[in-house]
Length: 557
Image 1 (tube, helix red, strand yellow):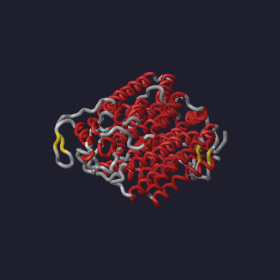
Image 2 (image 1 turned 90 degrees about the vertical axis):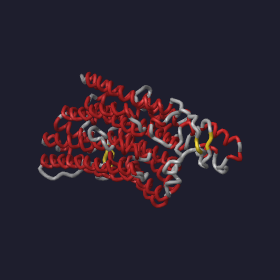
Image 3 (image 1 turned 180 degrees about the horizontal axis):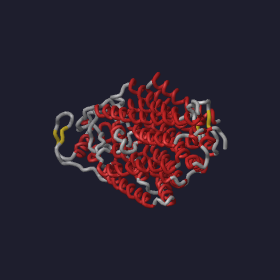
Image 4 (image 1 turned 120 degrees about the vertical axis):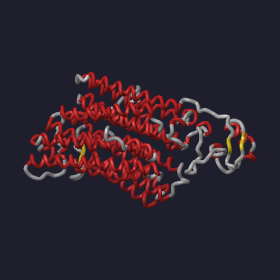
């Protein structure tokens, strides 16, 4: 069963990518959605074996443990959600996106998710680096998919900074293997087994240097300050499904790479050094993100800074190193993926509905979007660590771990910065969702150059009262209401104030993933299922050193 699940995880996304590129259109949408669902189902099937501490292996290059399964769940869930969301999302751009674009988009989406889902399952630090390098190239192309000047600039910025970071991580990888080769007296294979087998004879100085380089290098992809500067631009300019994957999955996979170095460095130099390094990056990330959240004007950019905040939280949680804090960190990774997926999906619906990301121009979201509006509000409450959502439970566990480990001051600092971030994100979300849109009595000009006094709503009422005035007789009523009398943006999309948009959802396919993710957040907050709890416990034991990494990798309990 384990081998079959691993074959599905490694094979299905590639098949979906090939089929999407070959046929495009509806086939690409169906293949990608099916591929995401099947991959996630395969990830779910590994929970039991991972929780029991079993060795997951398929050939010499594929190997995993409980920690691997936790992160495959994150990627698999977002893969399925983003693929389904993309079907409704791209349907809104059918006028500007050709079948060729659709083929390339789904090709990139599937390869991106494949690289992320296999990264936790490859056997060795070097192969992890290769998988994350693939995500950089593919995701940079996806960031620039819309073809605008701002998206191209964000993609180049991301590619340059992330490549520099991965170059630093590669140097750390080389030094780690060099330390292993010197300790063994001969060359080593790239797998975890030979590396961890000689870990107690490695040079502490070399491993310290390798760990710092790994945190700095992979921290660039994870969004840790001060090497986070690519993240707000890329998350803001990428297509909405890609933004959700970047935030919920890519950052988590980069964090996974750091945790593997944590396990090695903990054996060689002890936990204290590792904790201090992560603590420094974590506090700086949390501080900067909390302050930036107070002054954001772009709704997607706001959620990007929220991602930096949460990556700072998990780094601080690992620095506490208490078992309850480590479990909280792993639960935080799962919960953050669901919450941030919902948040970006909701922001994408609002952007498509109101045709702007500018928070100052957004209002009345709850009135316009009867499903997406409340779901986005729930996601924001979850990101703010309010009960009964999973992030409340995970951050409570992290704080409890800090207090248990006699780090009272750091736990208090964590609470203060999280509260500050809550104020920033809740203030902007209240404006977007709860404050009614303002109407104007200024005369407007419709597409035919005719001026009309009174409010825009009264013009719409008069247009709809007389059937002979309905210029777009063959279009749905929603399309008539959302186009008559409105200026057209450069891309050909009506630039609509909130009060002129018709109430209703854009696509049910954009709502379903949000409903599922909110349900997951509630489940994680109220009661973590027993099999998942065992998985988190086993992964915590591996990170805390209670279960030897070397023994786990070779299948010995």
